[in-house]
Image: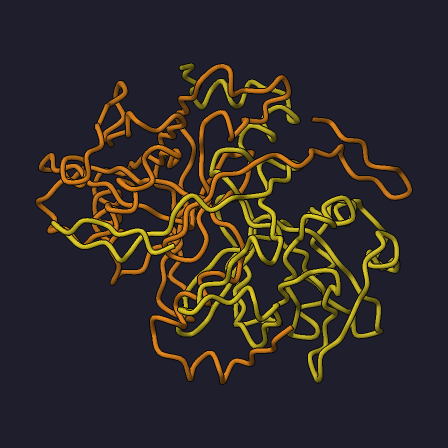
Length: 211
Length: 211
């Protein structure tokens, strides 16, 4: 085992440090955020920070740095109040990663990266047709972290679209059936395989495998 | 494809809704948070919300609901200023899940669940010996979300311990070599397999596979 202290992390060059620190929390969710400007320009950007914030109300959050690519997403969702999250599926990882390129605001990453935008009823934000799990999200609030000026955007789940066969009998979504991938670091994409699923844990009671 | 609107989500019973909404963001990181009370009682709890917040400074965050099991972790880290995050490895998923049982504050989940606490120098928080990637974290700040009273805890990376062979030449940590698992929903544990790793994306430039 090797030991790394904070002073060592800050002695590394930016690329090495960024790769290392982005690996630390473990596997990350892989989502394409879709949005549209008030003038009708669609936008798509990959994020690995979409996080569950609560089930009742159903809330998700993501982390946005003003200086990074998702800033067009942020500007759009602030103006329209809406965005979408679309799971990156195994067969679109290359297109998904390409959305992280720094395109000008007037270029749609959908066209530039070869993905198809679709719309649902009154939701003013584009979904990704190639994604098998798509979520319509409404902006709720945000927090700017003093520690690094990063913004946590909080949004409520308004709409979900998924394949019926991926929905298990107790509400769990089988993310292997939606071909959802996980991310590590900045640029590494992973498929998964379920090891086990356990019953609700109680003190002095043996866990059961439930699938 | 099936479509689910917000009103349907709120019509479901709590168990079904919790499973469903916890699946929505995709795969989640799997970490055991270690802490100790000022009177020396160690505590360990699994979280799936550890999220990368920035690399310079190196910051991680996690989401804590005052009413759920990680509250002892929260109380301890507020008192001591420190906690640890330890990647859940494939061979300890059962013990890791068992830490989510609602043990009294005076019971250490290390002993109750069969995991080994170890300490490093002056860090006042226990690490999990069975974890192959361990992080020492210092409390920095917190935000209480108006939307649901959840607390986002922000912490700085002070120390990391990992197997040397898991560290790739450019700083990325190979999370298959640390046997790190991913979580979906509340209780489903997954191993991973790297599909591809891509070069930094630029407009009008083809992505290269870099391992």
